Structures are given as C-alpha cells and as structure tokens.
Image 1 (spheres, rainbow, N blue to C red):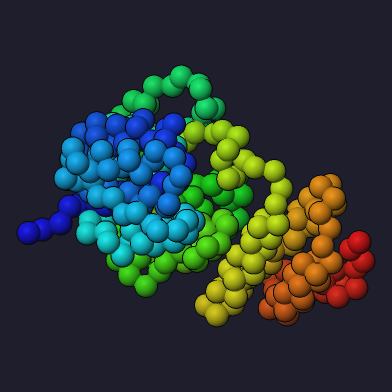
Image 2: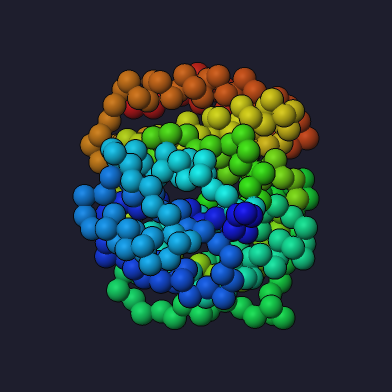
Length: 319
C-alpha cells in the first residue's frame, strides 16, 4: 500500500488552547492525501488527549507520546523518522493554515520541478480575529526562483524569516535523508536551514499567503532574554565552517558578519539584563578567534575590514 503524498509534522507541548484550531485547519484542506504526525512532547496539559481524539476520529492522524519532554527539535526528528509522505511540511501547534495550503504547495512543486517551495505567511496577535482563507489565487501568485544562489539567501536580511523558518516551506522527503535537527538546542531552525537550501540548489519562493502564525507572550521566540540565545552565535559559527568546507568564500564572509552581529547582540542583552557571565563571553570569543582565521582579502572583503575583525577578535576590550 502506498503512503500519503504529504506528511505534516506537528510538535505539541502545552498547546491545549490552540491545538483544535490548528488541527481543524488541516482537516479542512482541499487536498486530502496527507498524514499528520503529532508528537506529544510529554505535555502536562490536555494536549495529548486532544491529539488522541483526532487520531481516533481520523486514521490520517498519528500520535506519538514522548515519555519525557525532549524539545521541538527532537520531536521533529522523531516524526521525520516515521514520516511516509513524499513531501514534508511542518506546522507549529499554535498556528493554523489556509484551506488550500496543501493543494497550492503540491501544485507548485509539480509545476516547477523543485524540492523546496517557500511561501508567505501572516502574523497575528493572540485573540485577534483573522480569516483563514487569505491565500492568493493561482492566477495572481508570483514566483521567484533561486538557482545555486546561497549568497543571495544569506544577504537578504529583510526576508531572513522566509529562509530560516521550517514552517514556511514544503520539502521533498529526500532533502531529509541525512539531515536532522540538533537535539535539545534552542533555535534549531538556524542550525539547519542553509544546509537544506544548499543541498537542493534550486528552489522557489511562492508569493502566496498560506500560513497564519500566532504571536503571543508565551511563545519561546517572544520570551525575555535568556542564555540560550547564544545558540545563534554557535549556529552561525557552524554555518561559517560549513561554507568554508564548501569553498564558498563569500558565504564565509557573510556568515562571519552574522557571527559578530549575534555576538554583540548577546553582549548588549547580557549587560542590559544584568546577566553578565565571563565564562560564556570568553568561550564565544575563542570561537570567534577561530572563525576569523577563515577570512581573507577578496574583492568583497577589504584588507582594512580584515584587520578590523582581527582587532575585535583578539584585542578589543568587551566588558
């Protein structure tokens, strides 16, 4: 028996307030050949029971219950190991999607013969009333194609969320054959997005608003400053190392600039929140001293800029 065309992966934790709305938006899809893999990440509320209710009512819904809380990265990895679809989508349990979300995306991958399609979303505040059927019609959607163009991706700071967010794409399953999220780490998307996009080489951005993203104070990304934000620096250091191995010097340069951006942002946030930690700062400064050695003078990176970065890495006082 053949599997479903699309696997939808949803990590679930403390989502009882929003989960019905999320899952109902999936049940209303005009495209019906899908499975939903719900990973109840040892949620202490009624989320697990809600997942079980949907699974009992619809065989397309599968529930996996983690015995301990493992975090969204590990929950996604568990679901990826079980996914049977030819294509993979991720949805966060407090968000929901347009009724033609799957049909538009599946048609886009077929029409354009690509393994990743990125698409648009709209943010809304918790409690705000907004219609789900906001996707643009097929005859008005524009398509932007990327072909072996990671420099363009990394330089496009205005649309960073488009590239980084896992929920803003549909993927061919083969993209995930040897890729998984870093278990237990905050900002897991930042660690992997560039590897996925670089691997498939050609992908498109579809100007269709298919995903409704809820913003509320309890979201991890909207909490106050915490030390796990240093993971952004760690992720960008790994990004730099990846492109160094690939021999893509321009992407190395852009990655180093991102390393420094998140380094100084964390420094300022630690000061502003009275959370200074010499051990963490010194540890990441050592990482920067290693990263800076990957730079060299090129047409896009001047000798003056190179000297400046060495000065910051080795001599500039921080505290």
